[in-house]
Image (tube, rainbow, N blue to C red):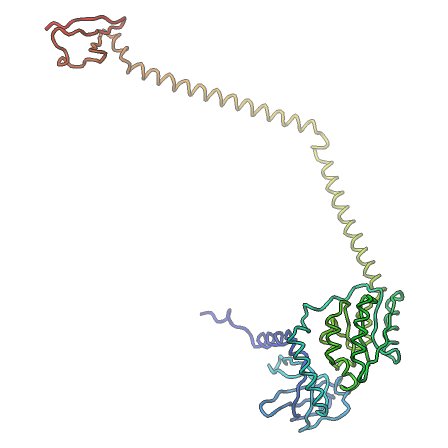
Length: 398
């Protein structure tokens, strides 16, 4: 057996496993609870540690970019919640959690409630990609649900108008923190839909703690987002913060400014693309024209167009030749059939009884039947004798 053609390399196996894990959405956004062990604060600023419970453990890494945002220093024995996704380090064939955020286990009740609602909504199909709506390419009106004070709305307006000075921003001010925030946010989403006030909505607020962002983890807001006919971009908290609204929205943005960039196309880039397409179209049409022109000139230079009568004459000569060949074939066939006919007539003439009579023979017939034996002749019977020039009667006399 030729194993060489059947075998795969170690690298191919690790790469395949990495791709499989990367394609699993459930493994790309996890919240894992556990205890830190084997903690190492590397000189590069990256954090390496193991997260464990009473039954198992998993390796984790937190790159410097995310580690700098921590407001505490992790240590062995500390119980934490980590946010991130699982991937494979291909060189060593090791899977590990790439941590984007970490919180001390001090708000366990909220995290438990968060996970329970997330699992419930996921089971009901709220996170299905098939339900998500496309963001319009050139929206005229951007609906923004956020607080009218603060930097969030200013950032959205600045980014949006810079990218498209003609876009209209329609702000619906809602509380984004506190006990009354969730019902007001849900009411605002429904109001936008009922009155068709926007082509796309941005649901936004700045960063904060889990308690600060909690209105965007309430079921009433989740239902309003899911039932919205207007596409919604969720931009809640910082890049490392994940709320229920992020999972249900048609698109997630890491920041409010990024949400504005996703919602509003840059008209200058669009203009450049249009000019590029125009140039490509012009070039394609020019090439097509040149090709058709060459084909036309080639056709016009051919003998068919230069001397059409000559072509007709050539075809007439060919036709005459075909007619002559046909006449010869018909005459040959006729002569052949005539010769066959003569041979058949000659053969029939040879076999004819009349031919026998010309040689002096006669035919005796009795009651219309030929007599070919003397035993058929009795004394006194009448017979007919056929000669070459006629028939006569006779009587048999023994």
